Length: 290
Image (cartoon, rainbow, N blue to C red):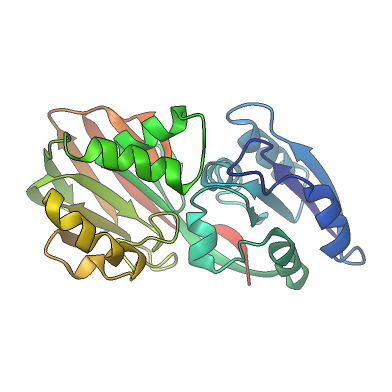
């Protein structure tokens, strides 16, 4: 019997996590798994629970929530053999989409029954772990506003982004990427471990989770009148072919900016400051995959 624990964020996304107990009882192979279910009560609680799971020698922690819940659960699992499973119930579900985990909770639970695992990279941004994507600039500002919004979901994110876009001015960044210094003026800079920007959009469709690199995606501001034509390319995974994107593969990045404090890791905002250090952690997380 494999011993696993489901960590459920009762406030994630758009309510898909409701009734998860019955779905687990119905679809999880009871002859293979001995399981328990716990609910997060505060920010950081999933990290505490996943660390406890490692100390108890559990085989897997199953995060039921969005990218933030997955991130928190992963924080307690990096460097251990305890695997991370995901039942995606959030707004963006970036890592789940990259791994091709079904968005339907019942189907995602069935994936656990086969119990196939793989090692993937993680990274840190100023010692803040991320698994899928992190960034500074405009997308960090949007993430901060989205975190304070009353409603979740793609429509809320879209409305925040479009209302802030025209007034946001690109910033100048100095970066040292694996020892090479560059300067760029950018709308935002994303650090991509996965190929997902969230909600099935992609700036870097060729990003891989197990190649030992983070892709530094430097995005210039698209003229407002062009956005209606170029925005669909995010969903078509062709935006990286436009002249507004530059991608550099890296293992370590030092970034300095004159203005701006916001940053985000897997969509969750934090105060990053003007000096930022990014570092890859190759094959540091064990995940359950389809």
